[in-house]
Amino acid sequence: MSYTTIVKKELSYKDVTKNCCEKALLSAIVRLEGRFIKERNGYYSLNINTQDNTEARWFIFAMNRIYSLHSDIHMKKNKLNDNTIFCVKTEATYAASVAYSDLGLMEVDEQNNGIFSDIAELTESTCCRYSYYEGAFLSSGTIKDPEKGYYLEIASKNSYEIERLYNMLIKESLVNAKKSKRRKMQYVYFNNSEDISTFLNMIGAHNALYDYENKRIVKSLRNDTNRMLNCDEYNSDKSVETKIRQINAIKYIQKNKKFDVLNGKLKEAAMLRLNEDLTEYNEIAEHMSVKVSKSTVQKRLAKIEQIARQLGYESKE
Image (cartoon, rainbow, N blue to C red):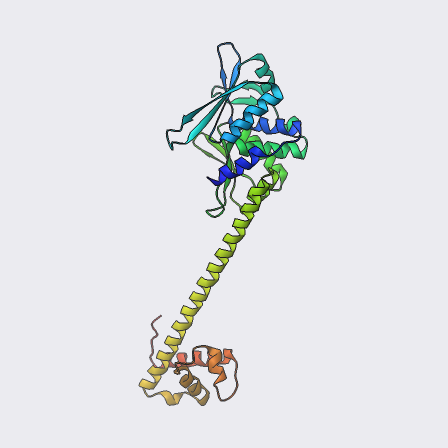
């Protein structure tokens, strides 16, 4: 089961207690996913195609409960991915035209998209507005599993309604909505985990939000751990490279019988660096005849390298 299906199933079974909120939710589905076909009797039928059977069932019951409209449903296979598509078609009657008008329909364009009135009357209250967002996701939304990435989108061929949805979300100022166009589809999307969490909370998908946050936290901790391990590994590699370079510089000085050019403090640091049991600067500092800091040891060994280079030593970095 995809992550989108999990979220939509929760929304489909969630109770909508207010009639105004239910109408706002239903309007979002009709506006973003509905196709209107003019039948022989002159009235329009409304067609909704979805891969989610719970959404199809909710839509049929809502249309019957609010407007006493009958709807038929049949299934077909998607030729591209062999998924089952549930095709819902409402009756084409005068009562249906009244219902569509109540949801905001004014006329139908050449692509069978509805042209709707302003949504303001249906979304005056916050609860109705959030219900509208819920319907938008339920009908046309997809969300990526947070373990695979952060992305949520709502897509529709109805550019007017996508633009309207985008402007509504922008006015919320709670989420940073973005929009795009690919082929004939228009998209409103979020690609930030915080925005997605906020949106899931707005539409009332609280179980999905809880799971989403858990997965997001686990993923963040895993990424932080990997970064720390990679950093430690990098630092370890650099430490080994530095030690080898310093030892080679000291051996070069010894080989060329120039060890006497080093003063007493540098000689002591050089001999301790050659000790294979002492790997860290703080370990060398502890074995110095006079107590010094780790940074002092580091500076003395760097000075030895500088002297070796002056004598002709070339480090292989």
